[in-house]
Length: 324
Ligand code: HEM
Ligand SMILES: *[C@@H]1O[C@H](CO)[C@@H](O)[C@H](O)[C@H]1NC(C)=O
Ligand SMILES: *[C@@H]1O[C@H](CO)[C@@H](O)[C@H](O)[C@H]1NC(C)=O
Ligand SMILES: *[C@@H]1O[C@H](CO)[C@@H](O)[C@H](O)[C@H]1NC(C)=O
Image (cartoon, rainbow, N blue to C red; front, side, top):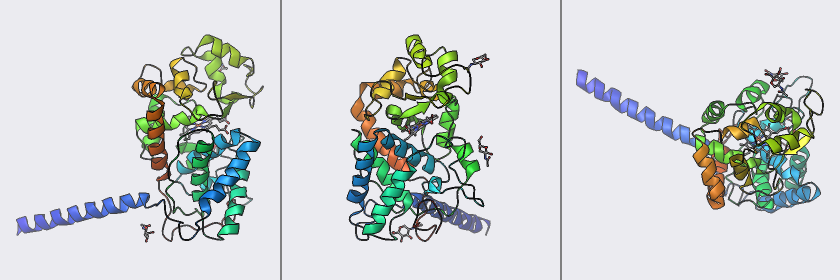
């Protein structure tokens, strides 16, 4: 009797585990063909708007890619970052990592308008952001991949989660590792995805302490950056510097070459090459751009799989800035 009840328990446990695994893997229940019948013109429609935005301002591709990261890290890739604050609703746009910093929302609006024209009410803002991020990487010279789709849009956002889940540039290596681990991304994924800092800009307020106070920095690089980022806090806070000093509008592996020369702009960047466990990954990507590209694709797909809303959860927003 005892043995039969324990075998029943074992079977039940095994079954629950299996169910858990199945439910767990539903987080990746996205498909590259999700809109192939319902919106066959989706991809060229998105691409042409991204292309024209980037031809007006090259940096905007970087800004869009960052929006996707900041969306996915906060309760999953659900378009939550796109919701505007109102008198009765506090969203993520004014969270610490986004305030005076996150940009590219108009491009997402323009894409949404164009997509609504060809297939009204079908495509989520979360999927538009995922697709536009891939297109930005490709247009700036990076690798191409098929984007998994089928995400739906949130009806909520969380400023507290945005404050807590997105790592700040003051992070230590172990904090970076743990923030990525919290969303199912490995240490290597963290280093790979940080390679996105091969494009785009950062504000003086985010690298001041590094260029005045750190030792693991090339001294002539630090001096040069000090020229446009005054020491007193509050002065020149929004002055910009490129995250990749070589080629800030080309998606390449120079970010990793810079780290090896102690020319990472952010404290968090240089943490990846500071005598610790990730030095070897940085060296690998510096020596081998095609390995970086293929790992970047895998890591972007993995990041895009973070807790999507699927099936009948969430909604397809009509306007990315507000809940229907
Ligand atoms: C590893 C942890 C990360 C930290 C601490 C971090 C931090 C930052 C900071 C502080 C900025 C500058 C913001 C400003 O000064 O206004 C920035 C910019 C940027 N980040 Fe990250 N980031 C991280 C990872 C990522 C990831 C995973 C991606 C995308 C896959 C990404 C993409 C970008 C891009 C493209 C920009 C430039 C945006 C623009 O020019 O508008 N970052 N990041
Ligand atoms: C998020 O951080 C910002 C800026 O530090 C702060 O003003 C805001 O109160 C924080 N929000 C929450 C919900 O913790
Ligand atoms: C540099 O460090 C000193 C001593 O800790 C501190 O007083 C100062 O505010 C820091 N400067 C910057 C620009 O972070
Ligand atoms: C997974 O996708 C299939 C096909 O689109 C859908 O029928 C199913 O409801 C989805 N499952 C979950 C858990 O969202």
